[in-house]
Figure 1 (spheres, rainbow, N blue to C red):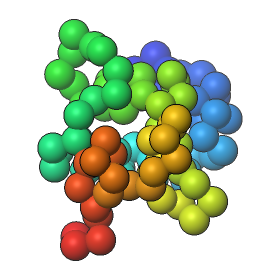
Figure 2 (cartoon, helix red, strand yellow):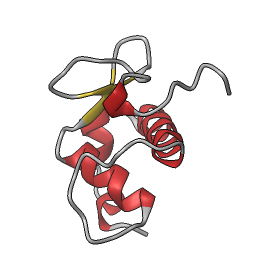
Figure 3 (cartoon, rainbow, N blue to C red):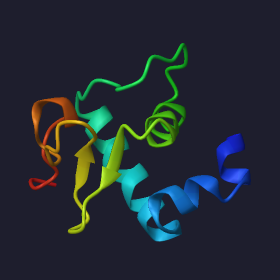
Length: 88
């Protein structure tokens, strides 16, 4: 288990366990479909990459529950966020 999950800080940062789970799932799908990681890590473990992106405020869920890449305000499906999940 990743150390970030042992503390409540990541849960509080995202706004709850359900939102955290949703954000992780959506971002992992985007990474699996070809999105580039937004953080530099030596690890290829997708869970570690997603957690690092959350902890560095690179990704978050908007008010409608869509994955957003921080800094550009683009919702999921934008070039940096990876392919859209609409066709799943």
